[in-house]
Length: 458
Image (cartoon, rainbow, N blue to C red; front, side):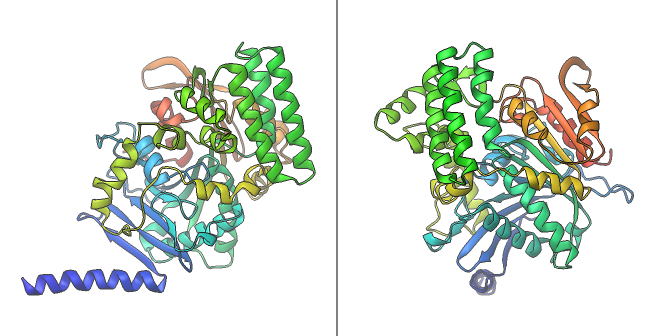
């Protein structure tokens, strides 16, 4: 018994030493199908990661089994929580098996990014990422630590899949990873980048909201005029490099849209927001900026109690049974689905576009896939198509001239979406889905992921 006790103490001591030295802290479950831990990406700044190895893995030398890095939005929304339990991981928020888990097509790596998000944390409030580039550097450091020390991971092509604001991180990370690979400091193969309802060009999205809602009879001419006026102000601020002011004007625009539409849901424009009364009460108190941040981040408005919401099941889960399973979460870290601190630190970058990074990836021959939910408003298809047309990529005109192919799922011949592809650019229009495509249309989303990653068939 004393021997066993000493071994346990030795393990704990080892983890503490690794943690203090800034190396990877790693734990596994018994069969090795799950690994998780921390990487100290900067002194006193720690990113939490969780890797699932697929039980559906197929060994095929000509088609290596892929791995997906899932990047959540926000910024400051938890991929380990929402992306994992809420969208594509093996278990749902009730710890029931998910029929359409993306593990059927790939291994899954979730990261709470940027630092201060979810289980990730900083030991000094000055260490939150203040730019997209800083968050990207942290993610690159994490990839170096994980992949360079694991030969099995190096065999799998990495697909960076992002949702919402995560798309800005994804394109920057892909370029950073390619540079590190070229310099020999990162050992991995980049399979591609997937941008799901992503905030790549804020200007194009804010200009899409008014016309789209007017066509849907959700706002009238007066509402359209007000929305377009604020959008024009945002454009002028962006052109002048006034990015913080543009973020505050974005908050004004969202509040105007809410008032003119009687609380349309920014994640499904066919519905009303589920937090109407709380949002209106907060607006009356003058919490405009915070309300808009929450409205942008569904994770915040529906999963925390900041505006009095009682729907905090996901936070209870990750602060309870999941925390006990993981064993390595520091006592002073309380899990939250969305970090306001992480969001506010990135306010200066929030409205900056990342179209040029997409252009650069395409020019380098990287496979770029864009998918868009039909009834999403915050990152509306109308806005996504607008920024795509701004690409300077030489293949753009050929892409635009291609006809779309209808998508189905299984034996169901109801149209589920459309697909278009030219060279290394692909676009999926997913019908009946809002901002969270894997949740709203899980079957077609899984088929899409299989096609993107070219997962070998069983």
